[in-house]
Amino acid sequence: MDTVTRVNLAVHGVRVDAPVRRNKGAGPSDDGHLVLDGENAALPIVTDSPYVIRQGRVYEGRIDLGLVVNTVQRPKFYDLTTADGVPYEKIALLHGKDVLATTVVQTCIRYEEAQRCRFCAIEESLKQGATIAAKTPAQLAEVAEAAVRLDGVRQMVMTTGTTTGPDRGARNLVRSVRAVRQAVPDLPIQVQIEPPKTLSVIADLKAAGAEAIGIHVESMDDELRQRWMPGKGSVPMAEYEAAWDEAVRVFGRNKVSTYLLIGLGETPDEMVAGAKSLIDRGVYPFVVPMRPMMGTLARQDGATTAPASVVAEITARVGALLQEAGMAGDDQGAGCAACGACSALKAAGG
Ligand code: SF4
Image 1 (cartoon, rainbow, N blue to C red):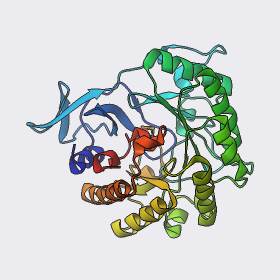
Image 2 (image 1 turned 60 degrees about the vertical axis):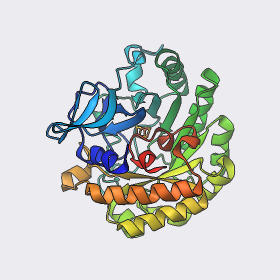
Image 3 (image 1 turned 90 degrees about the vertical axis):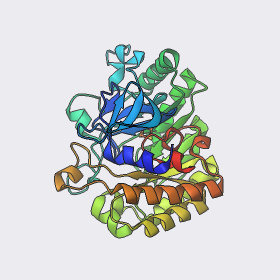
């Protein structure tokens, strides 16, 4: 699949009835989950998109684009309930065909309106009753075991809202990773955290059994960070750099990643330069178009997704840099770069 087609689908979405989708929660995208030519793809479901899925093929109008597509089916583990009475679906979700994703703490100290990341809706799914505020290690272990056994899940992503302590939520993930690895020893797990003030917790995450780590900055531009993420943007870049460097030391080169959101205001040259500086540190820049999803301040502001041509240019250039550096998303073993659904980087060689 070429990068331009993959980006067009990510930006313009598709017309399809997708049984597995997320429409609120942590992070920058809400989508239906599909498998496009064998790769995970989280694509917006758009009723007037020029792209339509019919009988397992993608069409632009009447033209068959030559892509085989399958919708991800509702997993069997969604029908189960934990020993303490919580539906599994409120503990963790299937992303793509084989990723189990959970937000271990669904609240965030930065969620008051003046501090909130404008693209994030972490507490909206909680308000809707679609999830619970905090998942215990025992619940996560129970759900992970079932998801692997019943639905062939191959990797797990654990993210968290930011908490008040100096670890900013990472300590809780240590306990969660340990419990899941005890229940399912071979399941690779990626953890996603803010830079912790206590850097030693990064080694604790690795020792607990995490395979990869995401420390997500979203933008390398300080002024845009303040504008889009007033709370998180108050964490100095120096703290991100120290956390990335410690994570590369502990987890290894290309086992550390960060999101960079296309559409916050950086030019393609600025974004590519930022991505290059991350690659040089051993950090995989997961470039993703920002889509203002339901329940976000960005949506309220009337923010729009960047034009497909801009997303395609940045994705292609960053993909080429990753290829040159020998950094493939698949080699992360777990996490968003390994899943690839929310970015078009895999089509561009990343
Ligand atoms: S890229 Fe990350 S957030 Fe997107 S579907 Fe995959 S695991 Fe989920």
